[in-house]
Length: 168
Image (tube, rainbow, N blue to C red; front, side, top):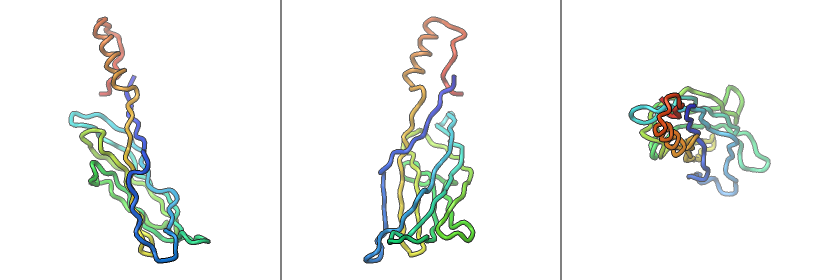
């Protein structure tokens, strides 16, 4: 059996919205950046491999709302710093005002699972901006205590055909 690490997202890490003109509501983003990755243990930490994906619609916050052009920039941060090779910007798709989409492959190394975040910056055509980062919660399945217990039992009982849960 192989051990897997699941990367989840905890919300509410940080949100920064630039001031908007008096009497108007902030611009709105539906969707945004996401990451589809798996990881591999290495001698120096963890290597993440996968895709950075952006798919969103952007509208004015006014009523009625109208599509608004925007550039959405996605990146992975480790301990608050952008990881080189993970910063990518996506603008409006073709002639579709207010619709951004794209995907790019990414790969990066991290010393451990701590301090990882997915970040997004939205720059709207009216000059307003928004930036947000979500901390990633990593869950080991099975938990390390289960791996250690099974391996300890196998060693104690000298079971030669006992499967290891360690990932190599």
